[in-house]
Length: 469
Image (cartoon, rainbow, N blue to C red; front, side, top):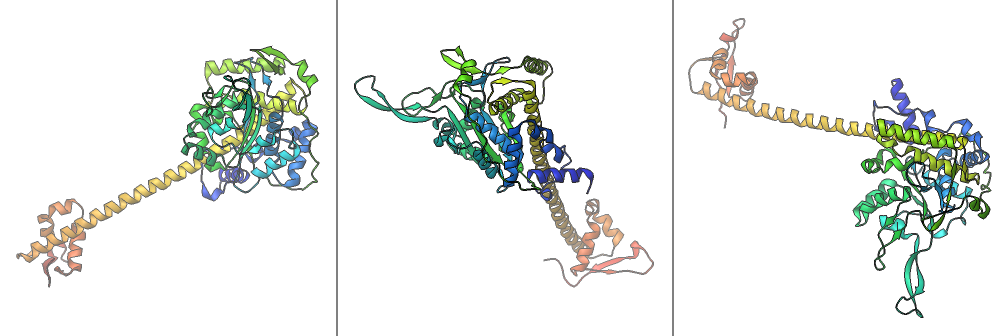
């Protein structure tokens, strides 16, 4: 096994891919690049506690920290937002993708994160349920309530209204969720709604009757956790032109624990209190918002990156990288119960984004290997068909040539091999004369009399005991 093959095998093992199933010459991250470094875990007490909890259950610390940050976002006020230093203000909604084989640790990591940020901080009706369809993403925040009838104020009527503003959703297999939604009448809205949720845009349709749901810009915060097997993530990347995978955070779900420490218990975490929110409160567009204070150095870097992308372009999968990083940094400061983002927070978020990029690269390498494997199988299959077709054609021509040889010989006259070859020059030019003559002899249609040492001209051919039927 080459060094490249060994490296790829290690990467696939980390992602839960059987290297025997794929072969690739593409680029893939090293196993070390699919793990958060030691200094990350030491940077904040909460991170060390998260890793210990993951190790105690044998699940991925990387995926666990991603889900914990997502739960912190989903449990915090939806009014907290990233200021519009580039573009418009944006909420902290996150989409987290756990990458690994089925039955390993994706669901267990989510459960571990729920233990760390316990139920009760998020409405149980929207805590851990499946994402469902495109409309279902919106519907979870709605409920039937009683309101005065506009026509008869003294009478109440039942209507559906948005009564929730936070949701934490989990789907075990992203491909199944997306494929199923695409088979439904509402399937075309699922990925579109995911993209809108990420940017805190208006989602759904304006209320017309009771069948339509609409979420105003900035009126919600979601964390959506999806699991996927590396070689079944094609449905996600098929939508890259619309910008779907660019909005995801990617974490490896595979774990190889070397020790099993005791579980440290849940994090002592609560959402930002009223006093903290009051210090960050502004009034915009008829509602109160709570923008995060972002350090000037971070703002300068984000703006410089934006200008560079406008002038020089970038990898299409990285167009939202800084916004995703800002969301991660926002989740980190919420974990610390702060609303001020420092360069240290930005650096830690960059470490997580590097891991996300590497995990995504590993998925793409697996998909690329699978594509080449399928293409190679197709080429071999097509080549086999061509060989079969050629063999069939050659066999047909050989038999036809043998019949012509027998007809010539049985009509009389003296025939040598050389004379037959000249008479049947067309079959000789097709390259089947010798095979045709041999077949005619084998079938007993003609008999060869050879004079030893006399060469081809003295190989005489005479009629056999029977003729072709």
